[in-house]
Image 1 (tube, rainbow, N blue to C red):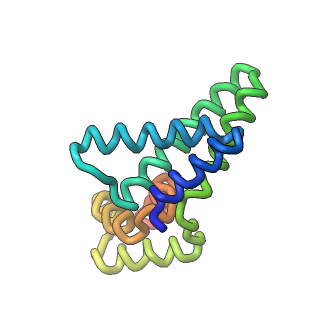
Image 2: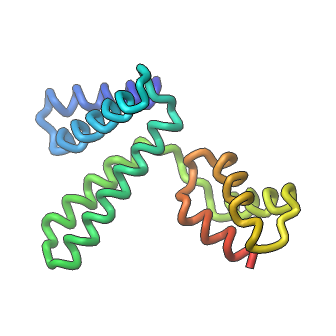
Length: 147
C-alpha cells in the first residue's frame, strides 16, 4: 500500500472514530492536495510525500518551540503529539553509523578535500539517503568530516 493510501485509510478511520488525530490528518491531506495542484499533476510520488511530511513535522516543531518560549505548555504539548503522530509515516531513520559510512563513501567517490566540496557531497548523500535522515544531521556530519 502506498503512503498516500495509508494516509487516506487512517483519515477515514479517524473520521469514523472522531479521533484526536483527525485535524492532523485533515491538514496533511490538504497539504498533499495543495502540493499536487501547485505542481499541476495528479499524484505525488513517495519521495515528494515524505518531503512534504517532513515539512509538516518541521512546522510543528517550530510551533512547539515558540509555544514553549511564551510559556504555553498545553499548545506546545499538542504540537509535540501531532509531530510524533506524523513521524509514523516517515521511512525508518538511518543509524548514525550508516549515515557516517554513506558520507565517507561520498567523500571518497567525489575525491572531496575541503569545504569547497560541501555542496557536491551534500547533493550526493541526499540522493543516497532519500528521506531516511534529516538534512540538518547530514549537514552536521559533512561539515565535521570536511573540516
